[in-house]
Length: 295
Image (cartoon, rainbow, N blue to C red; front, side, top):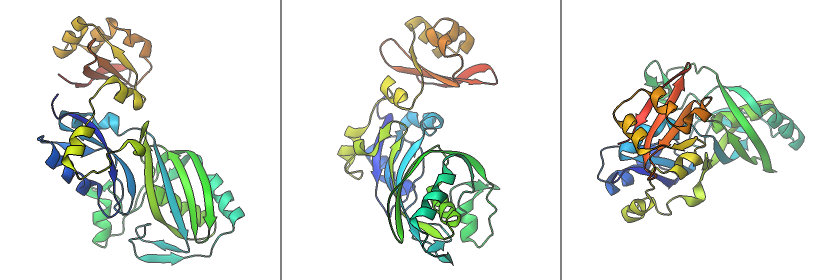
């Protein structure tokens, strides 16, 4: 579809993720544009942006694992856990040994308390809006996964780390928790997102404010895109494609295609023989349904 698809943008520091989309809105004559994962204003790095009808695929494009490079600055914890916040606590510089021991506690599945200054909704309102209005925000813990956590350099007060983690992991919270576990306090001084699923920042648009560059950077919803997200993809016959377009029940679609081999998958993506994206099928509670039909 014209002006529908996805693009990789590199967000600059000092601009919110929402503000970064203004150039995209101007570049494309479409009603909807959206990113698939917020980056804090001070942070830089990869934004995965959906344009036009592709915005409806946000649930699948936003579920990927992420990789970051960050700098933990020890000595001062701020209310926002970043360099823009107000200092709220101080602590001594941890030794290298103590820092390494602390970091080892934050690999694998962990319970994490998100920052009060975040986009998470509490009682129908963003936690950050509540915090800025002076409310004390009680943030519930959530289970996240840290697949890999490395210390690349420690020159007090700064520790440079890399993180490979699941969706929903807050690196600001990770910096806070590592510092406290090491007997110190800290905030995240810098953050750069390098990967979202299989997409990487090095492939992002070089100038995210140039309309011509953005239009050229728009990518189609092809098999490569969904495989990069780690989703199983199947090509179906034209006859089966018509069944999907006309709303035939997913079990009938499954019975006529190779998708049966992916019966244990929560989602599968269907394509026409021409390579055109057709639909996403979801399995919930043992039942298949259409997540989205693109036609």
